[in-house]
Image (tube, rainbow, N blue to C red; front, side):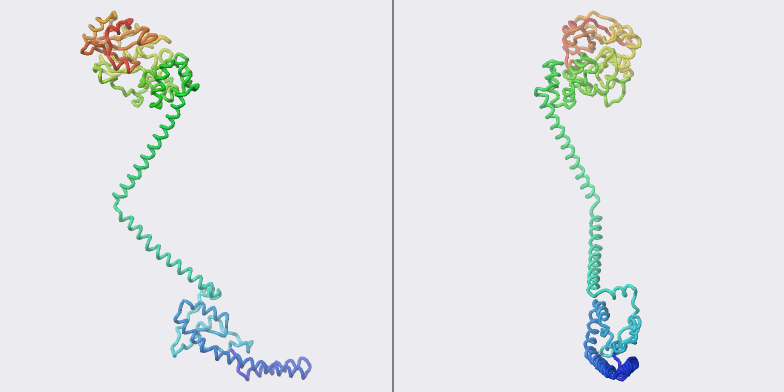
Length: 476
C-alpha cells in the first residue's frame, strides 16, 4: 500500500541524513540524497494514481467471478501473481505498495477473515479459512487447476453413465426367462457335442482310409500276412479291415501275435479272418493273454445270443471258447480261446439239460485239468466226456457215428457231443454239439469255435462222415 507524501519525505530525509553523517557531510552526496527523496515521492504518487485507475476494473472483475464460480480458483491464482490486484476484495489497499519496506502484508488467513463491501452496497459472504487442499491448489498455476477440474468432471460423468447403464443391462439380463437361458445353453452344448463327434468320426475315417490304402499296396506287412495265412485268408482279413478298426489293427500288427509260436500266430490270425465275431478276442490277445482266472465282467461277454434267426432255438445255449470272459486263460499250454472246444461243448450240454448256468466253460476246464483229462498241446482227452458226466448230474454213453444214430438220439431229446477228426471242420481235431433236428431232418450244430457254422443247419450224413466218435447225453 503506498505511503502518504509526508511519510515518504520524512523517510527520505532520514536516510539522506544518515548518508551525510557516514561520508563526512559531502554536499554532493546530500544533493544526490535530496534528488533520491524527490524520486521516491514521485514513485509513490504514480503508484497511487495507478491504484485509482485499476479499482473500477477490479470491481468489474469481482462481479464476473461471482457470476462464474468455476473460475474462482483462477482469480485466486491471479491475485498471487499480482499483489496489487485483489479481485473480489474491492479497492486496493495502499499498504501493499513497495514504498514502505518495513510494513508486513497481511497473510491469506488474515485476508480471509476480512469483509469488503460489494458493488451496490451489498456485503460479500464471509470467506472461510483455506483448507490444506485449497492451499495446495492455490499454489498451482491456473491452467493446471482448470485441467484438473475438467478431468474430474469427465470422470464423474463417466461414472454416472456406467452407473446407469450397467445396472440396466443386469436388470434386463435377469428379466430374461430362465427357460430360455436353459434352452439356449442346451442347444449350444448339443451343437458342440455334435461337432466334436463328427470331427472324431471324420478323423477316424481318414486314419482308417490311410491305413487301408497302405494295406492294399505292396508292403512288408501285407507280404508277411499273405506269407503266413495265404492269399485267400489274408484277403478276408484285409477286406474286414476296411470297415472294422480292430481288424485293421490286427492286419497291421501281425508280429504282435508271434510271441507264443508260429502255430499259435497262424491259428489266431486265421480265426480273425474266418470269424468276424472273434475279432475283439483276437484284438485283445497281445495285451490280455495270459489271464490267471476267468472273469464275470459282462462287458467282455459275447453279444451273440443266437447265431441266426433262421436256425431253430433249442434248450442248449450257444457258448464260445473265445468269449473274452475266459478266452485268455491258459488251457492245454495255450489260450483257452484256441484249445477249449471240449470243455465249452460240455458246458453247453450241462447248462442246457440241467437248466442252470452255475458252471462256465472255464469251470469245466478246471474240472478236466484237476482230474487229469487235459492233455498238453492236445486239448482234452475224449474219456473225460463219459467218465466225468456223473459229477455233472448227467448220463452219458458212446454211440457209433452214423446218420441213423444221429437222427434217433436227437429225436429222443438227447444231446450229442461229436468228436471230429481232420477234415472239413478241423485240421487236427475238434468237438462241437449236435443240439437237435429241424423239421426237415437237418442237424442243428452249436460249434464253440464258429458263429458262422452255428448259423446254418447240416446234413446228418455229412456230419457222420466227419465224426470219429459220439457221446450221447441225457439228464440223470
